Length: 311
Image (cartoon, rainbow, N blue to C red; front, side, top):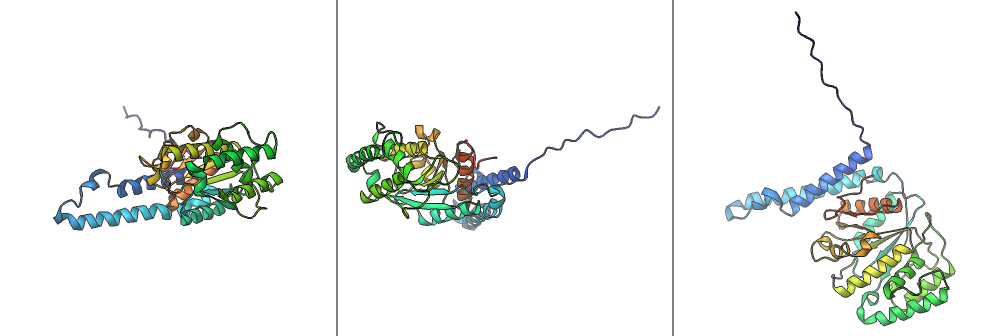
């Protein structure tokens, strides 16, 4: 009696989109780069003795190569990941005091690579975040709310939440596409510049649906944290979407981005860390696309929702 023929087990062929495949690889490279740079795992034991200096140098070189490869890969894959989805959806950049110019330039380049444009850079001045200037901020905010009339901003909102709404009037729109500057827009921009609170670009710069906030050098003191929480929540209410970008250090314990992620405003904005690198800047633009699609999250090496936004 012959033996029954053996049959191969059925094979499955899961379909993975190119974009998801590339994003997953970006996440792997981010984890690799961060893990090696921070000295995680067995590599952290190398180079501690004098006779291990050569291995230590090798590990350092490997860390640099790993970090650099993540950036190189992100730069090469970025355009395919974006797929031109920022076309006709410009972005306004709101730079906090001390924001790094090279980081802002890198983020601007990535926005353009995604098919979008930056309507302007708005530089927050130290006075807006200073506790000693709260009376000025409150008085100006109240006056502007009255001048603009009912329905533009909430005149009864707290000082910095109201100022955040006014920032939204100055640089953003809740629509899906850019909107021309209005009389209200010009009034707010001129008033903020005159009070030396925010420096705006050309008065006729259009308003953008998306706002990219680049954090500066301020530490997470209770006063600064309360100001940022109010400003960001107010801006989120008067724009199509807000993404807050910070460095790797700012996302670690004791950093301003880590502190913001524990505040209520984290439910209203998206956050990204690691934006001193190309990989982080690409992640920030992907987070912008996700935010404009109605979904938020915290992304980056310390992001609770993963290294990069999927989908």
